[in-house]
Length: 445
Image (cartoon, rainbow, N blue to C red; front, side, top):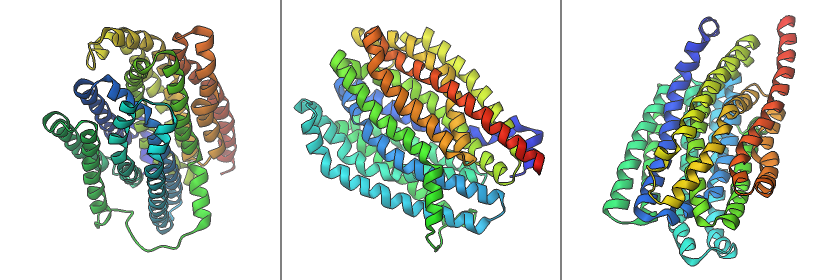
């Protein structure tokens, strides 16, 4: 990375690093939506709801995996900025080993406990059977899905974001082709959807392993000494991501409980379709965050604080404009969107009404996400953790139970906008504090 070039053309470098990451993230979200499209059209809306009910398990895997990955790549990026290349490569290998052990343990625990858990939460036998068909496979896919995400983070850290984009294009095409083959042609139902994802993810993993075994990579597999202090820094740096994803798991469960009590499976299906819009927006903003995150870390490690602040401000302006676009599109075009998935009049009306309220959240969500990425990348783990816990657990949980009591069913769709707006105020406060600290550091250098 060339800090002088970045300073001269920050927007160019934001897009140069972010666009490949955004394409990769969009393709990942596209696969999820295509899975939902096949499931809702071919298997049925109840199967779509069953898939949504199991998402808290995915979020737990993501919580652990992304915590380790983001924490590790943040530490590695700062060491690259400080010209400590060998130490950075050691962090790469330690991160992969830590993640592999942690996620395989999770797979074993959930595989053993899935059926007893489902029998205890009061679902009917058909929904239980549907979830078991899908998640008995996916619980062994999730560790490899996570390692692909971490590979992508380190590829971007070494300045080659286009490589992970190519990998994602390949796995996306494979996943969609296998969805059609397994679900439509072979009539394998939910099991087919899971196997399609599994095969695609494994192909992506093998391609990434091949790259990191080649001579083209800065990072690479090698023997290393496991350093407890680096593990501590990795987990601390990534703690906000753990909080964010674990919170998503918990709050998704709370959402499902509230919606099932008020609207039944129809409401869960509606939330799934509304949630896809947020998922796509979140993937785009996450692409920006993952794209510029290594530059944040590198500039901080090189003590070029002003460059990092400038990049963060430009990125937040970009995602704010993007949020306005999403708000307008889904506020006005909700009907066209929902018709892609269903012609069920009751479900369509529920989704259209929900989108008009829910889409308000797009106006500030991007700002909050980039703020959290920035705090993590420059080592301000406490601030990042507070932002993640507010928007992902504390305020969100409060609003999930409180707003439906005040506003009835419309309160469900207001949960995200109210939560994000309150978090926005806290994020601005933290950013002003940190900017002042960095300005003082700059004057001392």
